[in-house]
Image: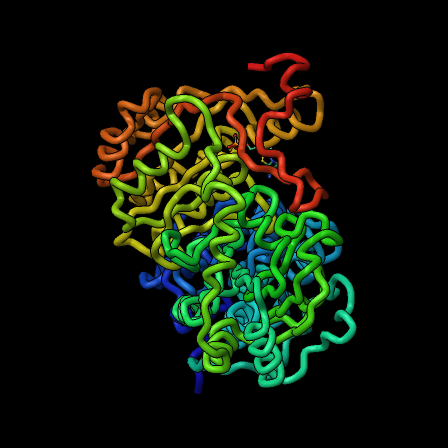
Length: 580
Ligand SMILES: Cc1ncc(C[n+]2csc(CCOP(=O)(O)OP(=O)(O)O)c2C)c(N)n1
């Protein structure tokens, strides 16, 4: 006869059986049975965060860095709702996060019980799938299946809501992670338009043949690669394809680090803050091979004016992406690695030297995006030099995110992690903590602005309590910089509610018992970064950067890639107050 154990015990055993080693969470009434069972499973390391949003971001960071599932746990009601931003970020960036939430006991559901929220209803559009477990006998299968769903195909977050009485219910532990065979519901509401006429994905073979033909005939081909190349681990294949054909490569924000930065074929990042030469290359290209990206509006600008001369080949794991944002000539539904490998076999060797030369003539490779002594470029160069590229960079959201994306010379795959789709400020610090747990032997830098850092800086306590040696950088410009930049460019320099006060970060570090440094001059940069990297534990470094530095170039929202803003708008900078 099978052993009878509680649902909570089954939850823990099923996680251990699935190979889960770390869970990020926060206890509370409706999840107490799980926390009661947890100490019997020393193989499951629990990281007590200071806010459930951080648990979800940390699980996301762990998942992105490890390629495995990231697990977060919260109680019902406010605990569960605090997860929402983190789950939305994971959904937008296809990160395999499994969230386990406590729920009020079954007889109380629907009665507005204390700390009852319909978390399944709330998260329906931001999860790949969700389960309300009504019987502890289902838990074993549900956990195994949820992990499978999160990881299979296009990755994403899955929520398991477990009523408290189900966690206490005794049932048999079968001890084998069998799946129930029940297929998960398809993702709700495929968004966007239907397939572009004539672009219906046929067989992969057909698509690859057509793509190879287009590449052969192209005079100005371009490879655009996105997060799918990182998720599909298609680095070697993409590089080989680029090198066999000589086609220049553009990496989207989430595709950064999928291709070595210094490679002669690498052009940089496209879109709103993309290099001028990259956007011009897109506008001049006659064939674009897009692999594992969704051509979102930050990449295309005004989609109607995007790459009008190009015939687009779009490779994506998700059929719904093909033709959603841009019209495509050839749609290929498949895994980035598999399709690129086939494409590599199908293309003939060629070179694109004249096209490359033409692109290089569009502009300098990288535009200076700063003024002043302590430039973002100098800071990032110091971090790179000191870390000798044994380092993963996790960025927050704002101006610094663009500098981190554009200026750091990423060499190794998947060493740049950011909230690209949702753009969730507050992501970097907790996500970096998750990245460290996935890559304990590596230096991890969390780079934030003074706004985003203050959203989740309470996680310093988590790092101290759990001994997680994350290096935290704050780019302090005294503003919500990216919004201030938009105000400068598009709102007559009316700096409404963007000046932001910060605490004394050196004293803050001291209060948490960690080293804290402030860098004001470029002369102190290298030594301070060196000291921070040499510290065995978490460190906080504040960099006092130019207050009104801007990110250039910039395509105005909804504008064409052909019309970048490359300098301070004269009219705007002449008008209005200076802020401070
Ligand atoms: C949670 C959240 N709230 C608001 C925004 C809108 N937003 C985008 S960038 C930005 C400013 C970020 O300021 P800071 O963190 O100081 O970074 P900086 O731009 O100065 O580098 C804001 C408010 C957001 N992306 N996320």
